[in-house]
Length: 266
Image (cartoon, rainbow, N blue to C red):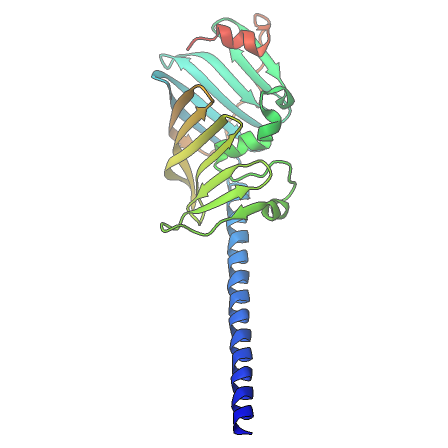
């Protein structure tokens, strides 16, 4: 009888301990899920400012040019390059429905839609994705809400430095974050093509909101690698009077993007 009572006591204790462990694991999993959701929301939510302008220095494989970045969230992203910092020679504008590229030196311009951009389907490329690149945001192509994105994004465990990697299970994007409020890099590799955008020198440009002054871009193919560095300065978030889309003058001729790029020489 004592033996049976002892066995029953052990069994009950084992079940209780097992239940406690299961409950503890469930609590930890719930906490981790909540933290993952918080991180995704933090890095996908739009910034607290709607406009940003900056001077920039572009180093493309040893060729250096100066220029300007202008952004209005949800409306326009403009990148311009200048000769000797004085005369604008090239401009690219990302708009919600199209991309406009201008060669002011040869008075040429090209208009294309995101669907016509090479590798568009593989990248899920549209205005929102381009916007995320420049606003230092995590993105999830094709999703409508942050909650929809969170269901598709796989948040991995923090590494020894506290960095957290987020993976898009459909398009293959990988986001390296600081685990709190900062996107340090975004990368993608597929079928012999890949790229990485790394962000650095985060500076507070609005109350409790930091923006990277350094962008390093590396593009790889099966046969080559191209790198570019963008350094920003004089970052401002005040609203200014500039047009979302630059008006094309009568002197400018519309050509294909391939022809324009062949003529463009910075």
